[in-house]
Image (cartoon, rainbow, N blue to C red; front, side, top):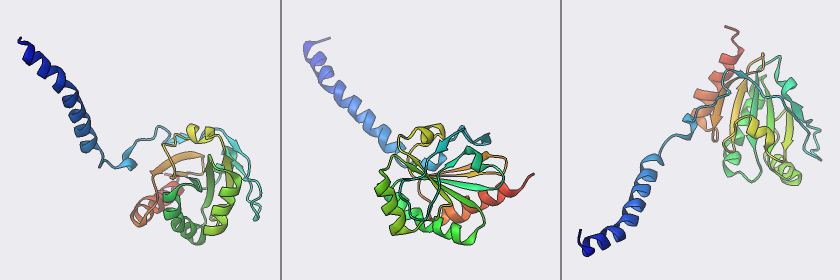
Length: 186
């Protein structure tokens, strides 16, 4: 092999590697993040206990895995710094106003004053809000990022997971049917 050809290969190799990486990202970037599987579907909720967010004026208590047994419940993982959490919030308010399902907020890695301000500004749809200040409970739930929403059946089994913010379609055609399915003992 001639020195000129070797030199050309040495110069082109990094370019080829970068092009391959760009191609990989370009072909996978449009994948639907909601299709990420959850290993917790059809499994019991992880054991946990979360304290309340300090200073919430409506006295929203914290909650634990024991609270998620006995009725259908929705667990929504949110944070004040999460823009998509603000976008989905009207759907949670609608669910709270028009359903008998209990809604639990899992506030992930947030300062108490910021979480309080978020709920005062946008409204509090939650029956209880737990502060997961270190993110440990979120990890146990298999949370990829905020927001995420789970449906738990009366036996404390996770039956549905929504990754990313709720929108009109995911709310009407995903979450609401999942809640109804979780009510069905069969």
